[in-house]
Image (cartoon, rainbow, N blue to C red; front, side, top):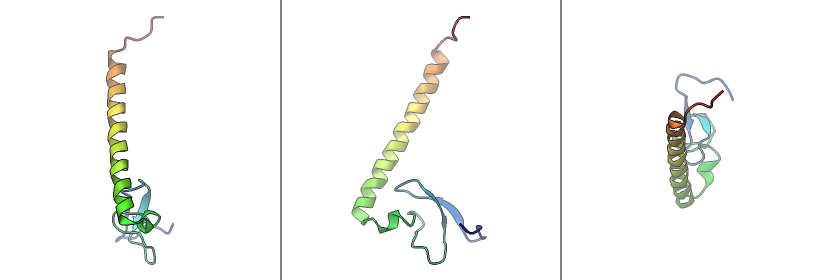
Length: 78
């Protein structure tokens, strides 16, 4: 990947979560979707976005619950 210029920004695809630079001349990527996901039909891409968002929410909740459990669990006896 070429170095980022002042107009380029590192973005995260809403569908797959991939990091990509935008805008890059000749690259079909949009502000919200990487070059791989932009070719997926819009209806399918919308469903993938919803599922990706939900997976991220569940992962966050799981990490939060694990942290709470770790705080409640007494350290092992030596």
